[in-house]
Length: 260
Image (tube, rainbow, N blue to C red):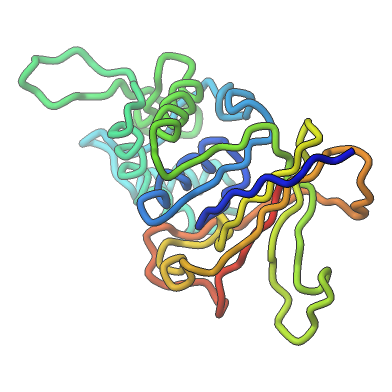
């Protein structure tokens, strides 16, 4: 027998609690209430087990152009150069955001009055030392720091052991007089309880778009993982948006998401 629904209200629903999901939640939390769905304990994602480091131009003898060239060579010039350059140009600021958030990247020994210098390594494909790392467990250091910041943020709630199973759209609800869009996402839990958080935005919406639609309600429905007839369940992945962009995506209303 199913137990009664529990309801949660939020402005943004983020599906996934790895480095990308938690970073997005922290970026958006100053603008509204955020719920993060985690299909298991937050320490079980791929980020936690990443051993390498993060490439960014921190050395004075290095350059973004060199980073772009190395990446293009390593990718047999099949990479989209505009995307490669965007990532290389913004890598340092993104890593600095992680540093400001408490990620303990290894440092070089220096005088106390000097600004910190980070220990940079050189890995395959790179012509300069540009890999910042936290010993040989960089992923664990990044994930632990993000989790701690999320845990202490008053605008973020994390629902653990919630699997996103399917999307709810206008068409699936029989709404044919409007453009088809995502209204929610069904997620299964490991218990019989059903949660129903409400959020007016998908994790793919940039802040500029979110501000336009901040007050539109959205449902997140949580159902048991077994015994329910939800045919055609598919894996879900979202295209990410530039969080610094002032241009909203091509939609006239915020996209609500339902998940459990």
